[in-house]
Image (cartoon, rainbow, N blue to C red; front, side):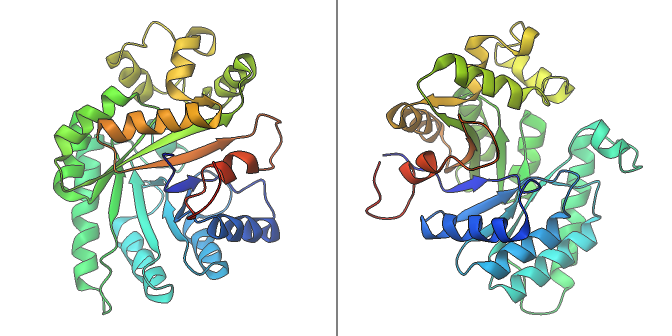
Length: 292
């Protein structure tokens, strides 16, 4: 069965004991990484340190750290420090966010391609001048459009994509070339109830629907006329993998066949609430000999 490399996990709804237990269970199931979104609750670097301190093998990746929130020098210092303390288990995933993400932090929105290019150049310059041991951990950037994918190809170690169809993965691989890591983030819901799956999908995707960058990307891939009312069934089905484990496995395979190196799961619980859907997580456990 096609499996997931890691899990993208929102954590603000969990207390610290619950979060530590969650990360440890992910590790015990064989997942290699946990990816942390950059919202407005816990601070991302401090949170990463906490999870690293509670695990032994699990990698922690920022997914995605808003570059308007931390300047390039401080971000390089933070990654260097965490990797020195925790044996290279911390990865940077960076993104330009959206105009509102800059404005809420009192920053002025800049040209995204220029902003990211300058940020990555300064981050790498800072890395090279920090004390040993040198931080050689990979740097990924959120990249959807061709221009940002070219930035990833030139200045980063790979690109992360989210809420994009496999055709986009094919294009991304062509732009990145063969030596960069291409990561696809895929929302998943283990249920054969199509109405329930689509309702959950529409609710989860609603925060992205008003954002111009996503609207432009979806228009490019043929969904521009299907966004009203929370999105058509075809649109939701393209963005969210749902059904039984075989159906979800096939969706992972579509992205791997299109050129992705790894697929990261966003687990949706069909029962609602904040409890992770452990049946889904256990079904796709990378642990050798696991069921599913």
